[in-house]
Every structure is written in C-alpha cells, then in structure tokens.
Length: 422
Image (cartoon, rainbow, N blue to C red; front, side, top):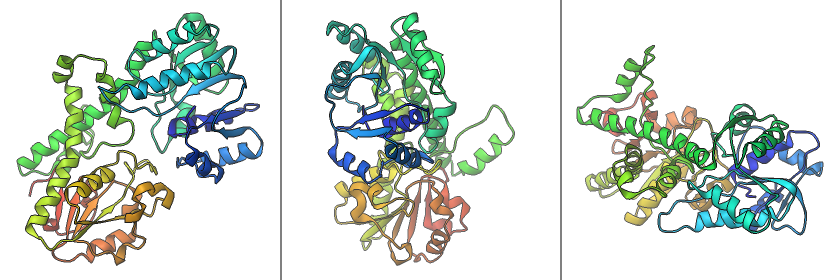
C-alpha cells in the first residue's frame, strides 16, 4: 500500500525473488498514470529496470483499488506527516491497515512499514482483532534506507521486526528471510517504533551540533571547514560532520513525530527537539541573507538556485523538504517581486514538479545578482558551473550553506559561506 519512495523501493526488492508477484495499491491516479509511462518518481540505481521487466512478465501491477483478492502479505508503506493537533495522517494509517487486513489470506502477514507515532501498531493490532480478523498477524518493520542507495541497502541492512508474540515473530522472520532480509528482533511494537524515530532524530541532532559549531566559528571570525579538516584528520574521537542544511522527507519530520506522544515539558527540555528547531532556522537565515543583500542593492530583480533536490550525495531526484524548495517558498511569500530561477540538469521536468516554471535550461544565459547553492550535488563538478562563477558580475553574490564554493577559486567578497567568518 503506497507507491512512494518506501513502497516502490520495497517492491523492487521483493520482485528480485523468483516466483513472487507484487501489487502496488496507490490512491493517486496522477501517480498511476506516471507509472504507466514507466516514470516511478524514485531515481534509484537499477530500480526502473526491475519494475519494467517485472511488469512485462506479469509479476507487477499497479491498482487504484482492490476487488476481493487475497494476498499472503501486505506492506503498509504510505507516507505520513507530523502535526500535534491533527491526527489525520496516523488515523489514515490505522484505517488503511484495517482495510487491507480484509484482503489477506488466512494467517496472512501485515507489515507496517510507514513511520508512525509510538503506539500506532498496538492500535492497529487491537482494532484488527476487534474486527474479528484475529488470524491476521501484525508486525512493525520500519523502512530505514537512505535515498540514492535504497536498493543496495535493502539487500544489506538488517531489518527491524516487532511482533505481538514470539511465535508470530519467528513466522514473519522465516517469511522475510526468503527475500534475503537479515532480521533483528525488537521486543515490542513500541520499542521498534521508538527505535525507528530515534535513528533519524539522532542524525538530525548530530547535524544540528555541526550547525551550532558553524555559527560559533562565524562569530569568532574563524573558518569551520579548515578547522574540521584539522580536528578530524586521523583522530578517531572527532568525526564531526560538515555543517549545512538538513532536509528531505525523513529527517524533517521524524523528530516531530517522536515528540507527538510526549509531554510538553520533555520536549521543551530536549536537546533533540531543540536541534530540529536549530536546523529549521537555516531556511529563515538564508532568507535573511537574501533580504540584507537586497537592501544593499535594491536594483536586484532575480536570483537563481543551483540544485533543487534535498541532497546531492548520494544522488537523488527527491525535492521534498529540500533546502532550495523551502527557501524558494519563503522568498515567494516574503519577496513576491523577486524573480526566481532554478538550474538542475540532474532532474527531469517531472522531477521539478510544481517548480518547473522556474527551470532554466542553460545556465550561461542566466544573469542573476544572487546565486543560492541548493545542495552538494554532482552538478557542481560541471564545467558549466565553474564558467558561470568565473563570469559573475562584480555585484553578484553567492549564498552557500553547503561548503561547495570551497573548491572554487572565487573572490571571498562575493560569497556568504555558512561557518566561515568574514
């Protein structure tokens, strides 16, 4: 259930096993139409080939609804959002899980793959039992892959699995091992849900510490990139990540979901919760720098973003919750007279989604006064970028939160580099 990143990559993994067929249930008819065109929205090495070949061999189909069929197992892989006051996203997971349980054969397996609040899988299991579907066995088996290497990681990463009892766990473990999964046991649904959330919350917090360090270095008129290179060099107790934006569909929401079931006092005193706030402030900080530049040069009428996806390494075409889209949205709301352009040759027109109207095909034809580095992608290895930077006007200005400009020999006066003092 769900043809987004989680569902479509898992589908490819399952289809690599002989004599397995998969049905993807997707509510969006727009997305189903794209699937018919063999555009699966997810750009993962090897994924399209697996899906296209499986369709031609009648091992894969995409449907908008089911009609009385029975399946051995179902994976709930729909996306979730976070909102303290609105439980619609989690209620949808519960309702869909109960609905799909009716489509399972006797003693069928229902795996919750989506990211959920703590306690959600217990709720699903209880409601399914109340609906007299007690023969359906419910499991929490969260997705934990990184975009850009998901197919590879589904083959290598251990899969967390939680069941209502030991017997059910062993049955599900044996089932998943047929597909080549390595299974690690979590004692309860709640512990597995918590484990999934803190994995991303921990990473988010580590990046926030780097961003905090970068701000301090800037205030001391120091260069955090030079400092990190020195302190990390062959020193096992210093593996400090570079500072920069933290986006994407997982890290941007999982910390919030973690705290949705916790008290306000725990959240207010939490380093983790405050780290998410720290990372989200980078978008506003970028807008502030743009606004300050406009005050210095009121004649500026447009700006360009180089890179649109939420990260560059590993490569992904996912623009959800990206630094670029966040700052673009803020610019549109707060500076409506400023023209916006986006250059990212690594993305197709479909990848651009609602931002396609801002796309620039040829970078050299653009002459903006403000250039915003959108991610740390391979596009910055292109000769076009170097040529573009070298041909900048004297009053052009680069805003770089990723440290990309460190590898270019550019006039430091033309750059705001996050974490480097002036």
